[in-house]
Amino acid sequence: MRNILLACAVIFCFVLTGFAIAVELFWLAVLLFLAGGGIMGYGIKINKQERT
Image (spheres, rainbow, N blue to C red):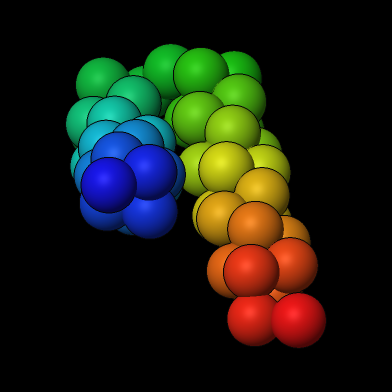
């Protein structure tokens, strides 16, 4: 269940990044892009820990 929520959060961040670019809020786009990457990295870290 946690993995699904993390995946949805990553997708939501990247969708909002596109929206921020469309309305020309580039600082928000950068912030959301970094947040999406951070959440995705956290999810990958969790998956690697569960497999070992």
